[in-house]
Amino acid sequence: MRHDRSGLRGRLVVAAQWNDRFMAEAAAWRDGPCAAQYFDGADHMRDDLLGAVGPGDVLIYLGHSTPSAWLGFRGIRADHLGHVRAPLACVIALTCHGTAPGSTGAGWYAHGKAACVIGPPGEVAINDVLALSRWLRDAIAQRAVQVAGDIVTCAPGLACIGPPDARLGAPSQMRRHEV
Image 1 (spheres, helix red, strand yellow):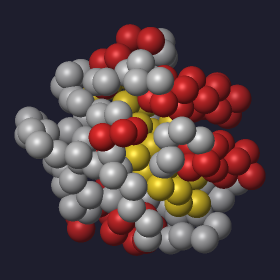
Image 2: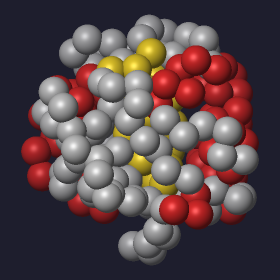
Image 3: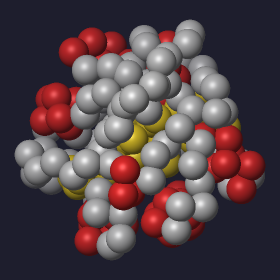
Image 4: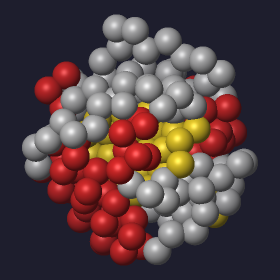
């Protein structure tokens, strides 16, 4: 599936499962140089998050998952993505099975809702997810990554579904939007 990213500029959106460690890491995305829009499973429901993301956005999910669903936000499966305004520039699923066949991550791409999806293809330890998130947050803030392939090249263990040249944008190019 091919997605046209020409002219799209979106927001950096971080979504954390209702879990103290994931929410603290997501807050660092919001409060630091990336100035990401923040959603957490404690205060937001699935429809809040899915209704807020849209064309050109980069969505980062931090949380637990099964092979077929993200467990945050009362569960998000691929069949919940129908009303998402597409395409997002990229979904970065920092969770187990982030890019596994049949996963929620893979569903974003298969349903045309994201130009690419990045994440671990299998199980990953929470400490490794949090370390990946910290590395990625610094890399985006320093503009060290511009396209999806930059992330996968620099972070072994992550896979990319879709074109590795999908542009991520830089924080200064992303607009911040409060919900």
